[in-house]
Image (cartoon, rainbow, N blue to C red; front, side, top):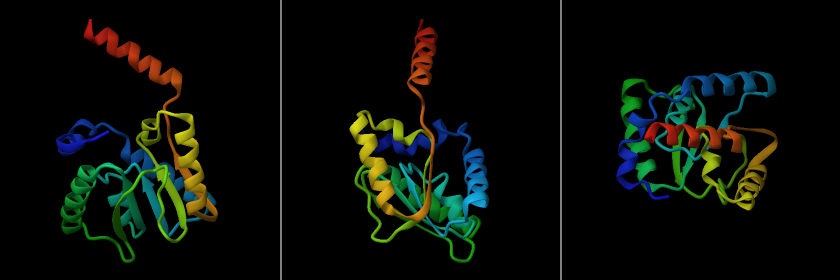
Length: 166
């Protein structure tokens, strides 16, 4: 999916997303299973989770297929870093890669993929490829946190959209 100009409107359309809740959930998991140092954020969009993680001192790699989304993320990171500098050790690197074939060159401690990013993979085999690639990109004992809509949830959304358009 090409985002082009949509990338520049994305944050306004997504302002109701529970970013703080996803960050809190990730923090709770890391408190329980071990705090990561290097985090890969798959399907990163405009960096609304990657940037706060870098501000907390994590080394973050934001991976997205859309060059436009990453350009917006870079602009946003620069603006946010002026407002609130990254904690010591914090950084964010943007990588234009497909989540089905991503690679970092070194293992990640954690991989996250929130905001239903995996739902953009339409074929079961593509989801399997993304999971396999993530497994291979994690260090032993690393953690993968993600969310997805179930088919039932997607059907409910579809029905709600039909009712709204009538």
